[in-house]
Image 1 (tube, rainbow, N blue to C red):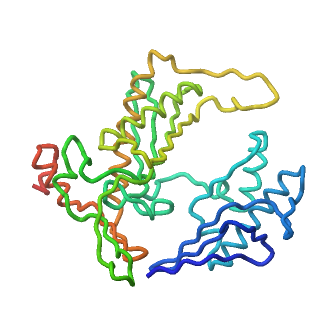
Image 2: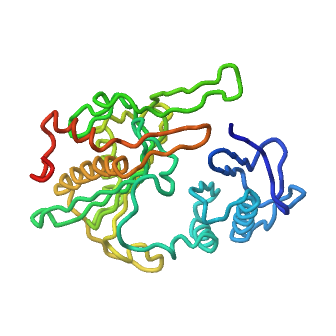
Image 3: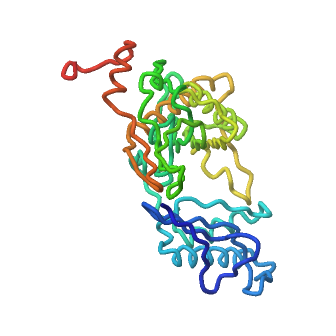
Length: 326
């Protein structure tokens, strides 16, 4: 049975009325932090008028709380920040990078897929979810541009899972997520359920010269890739799609006029198709790469079984196999 406790750290203001640090100990330890603000120990605001100093105070509190919970900043999976004025976004990024060094640690090369990083706790269509990537390159006649997609998939009900038009969720209706319900009580028992909960985050990158309004159109097409697999954007879903272009370097210079190029709208449809295809494949790749995991309260989420997936695709004549596999 999991143990849940509220805690604080020395030198960090512990506000009344809510729990800013929760430690959940079970098969693994998870820390949840919330509501960090630049307060003195008496509850007054520190460093008024100095945004960077306030941001350092907040991140200092985060560091102290994580370490008091037995972890380190290297274990942080995700942060969500509310900045009251968008003019401070660059100051926030600078302080964040001082603390986490995320940008300095960025590198090119293959992206690890499956139940890694923020994908460790995800479930997709009742199978283990995670991080997935895919890309498409347009032919030279259409510009030769590349579209890359990264997803963190955590959504979907098993019965609606469709891959290459095959009702995979109906072909593999078992292996649902299971957990120990109400341990230590008369109602304790092993429960399995198929629920469409969670969200999906999709990041789309391209070298095509697209302007912001065009990138917004690209981001919207990711929803079609999600839908092709059976996603419906259910009520509890908090889906996030973002798109950016690496073209037009220097376009954000603040102190000079700049010239930019753009792909005509009449030539953007192939980019839409590439986005949809890459999104669909990235989600499948996340599930294929993920492995079965067991977490708190015996919660077990099974990986998508590869051989049974192949059998389902073969049944509907969707699988092209090499002679060695036949």
